[in-house]
Length: 447
Image (tube, rainbow, N blue to C red; front, side, top):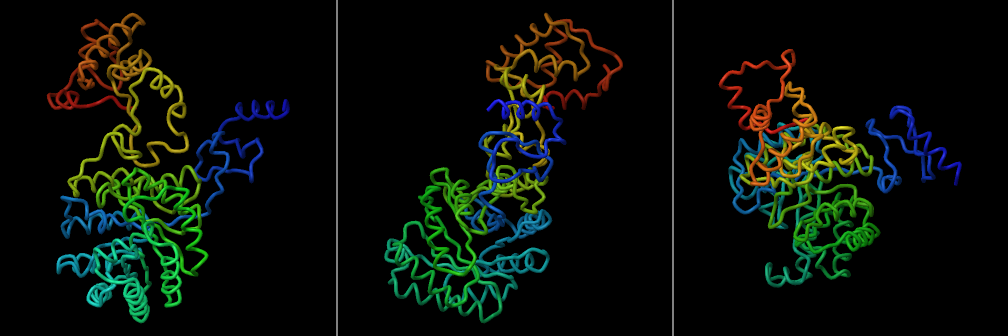
């Protein structure tokens, strides 16, 4: 025990680039794959998965968000970014839905280098439209839960199974990759679900997508389901999870841990009802928590999120993981003081704002402490005394307590009221144009 403690002390004293591996007992030596300092604790074990593929459904399921409609140009722009980032599959839409949808899917398929997918019910017209659009993958689906078979499709289990097999065979005859989804799988009788999985597997399906259509799965149960399905097929497994109980990303990750190869996600979690597993959450969890390289350019995640927010007309909540305004923001005095010293103190450490193309911010408000105020004043060219820092901090706290946002302009006004001296030869001078003043009126404090 004493030896282990001694080794830990040595390890902590080493600079990050010399910390080659964890000095405590682990399943295997851990080498951070992106130069991220390794942290002890739950991150000791990062060998649950070896790889994970990303199937983006923003342009299909994401567009099914109530009130959302992507134009042809919107779809092309979003698809181009997803393609440039290295997304493995882009589900471009539902080709049979309309002529405009067909054209958008066709043009995305012809202009992107990644695999493009088109959705189709187990209906001849749907499948032919998808094939005609030129996609490399057709994703066909049919309800398998009794409630949907009886009250939505008005069919029987036997009819559903036959349509599924016929559709898979038609797609495979065309020489296109086939993905089959037993819709509402998590509310489907297990015996019937495994029977239909076996039937489409015999028909030559390439991918089995397991959808938690109504968002009722939990990570443990969903993982068990994926293991059972995996034992009944030679096809690759894909998962599609919904966020009705806030478990979509957790369920998607559980599916990958249980043997699935790929997860269907949407940017900003948009999609039916409460949405889908989030693209940004899934990718960064795989990259940072599991230390697996997805091959995706994560530095464009914030840019992608902002474009989807604009085009979907769905505002991203401030506390949204990874891409929300507060994701890398700090107001609390204790947190801000720690982050000023070392950002790893109150951020994950294995994920930084730079990794997702974002910025860290120190937000001035009711909970701001003196460390943050002193740092911000110095950045603005001031040289405050301890008493002046305390005076300005009181003003910031009082202003923030009124639920008002403290901007750079406000901070400078408080400093001037407290007669804080300002150094002359800093990055900025006393003279400012009217445009500079207007910018400061809206600018929040960032680091």
